[in-house]
Image (cartoon, rainbow, N blue to C red; front, side):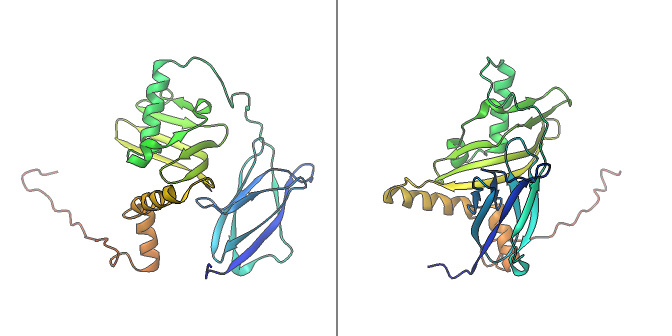
Amino acid sequence: MSLIAQVEFWGRVLDSTTQSGIPYASVFLPGSTFGVSTDESGLFSFLIPEGEYEVMVRLVGYTPKLINLSTFDMNENGYTIALNRSYRELDVLEVEVQRDPIWYENLKLFKQYFLGRTKNGKETSILNQNIIRLDSESVPSTLQVKAPDVLQIENPNLGYRIEYLLDEFMYSSEKGTFFFSGYSRFFPDSTINRSRAKRIESNRKEAYLGSMQHLIRGLYEGTAADEGFEFRSIEKKKNPERPE
């Protein structure tokens, strides 16, 4: 039994123009398994742990909306969230065409940095990769990636299916740097048997220990040093043999 208090988060998602409820919109806490889809009237309700969060609301054909939420100052009358229709092209959600070799090379590069090069990353699959738009020509030495819909990702080693709303991805081969941002929703695999569940739990622990999430949580809770993280200051000194 969880000892963490939970609070009901409920409300309705509306079309900003018609003011009618939007069915099947996703309402979730990014980076977590907390979330639901609205019913046929646009209503939603689910429990979340006490705290302060960002909430993502999205549906294809509408501009996603991110709102701030604090369980310590909840609206007793529920939340009304209005979405604006999006007029971006939706006719390329699934395009079955022959890709050129450059597209596949760029896709390989994107996966390498987006999914990672760990054993878990290498086993992860993007199920709808054909919707990905890869652009390595608009900006010299730079790969830019966009997707018109959420990426459906399967991570069998960690026992999750992930929906990822990619906001931006850029990789500079000249600088050797990359950056991406977006919002993820996790769906645990409900078909896992007991023996596989143990392996997945071990994989999740291995992936978490030493990760950026582990570090941030340790810093937030003041336990980073106790959990093995070391912090050292760097002092830059001028090299007399290489005057500026």
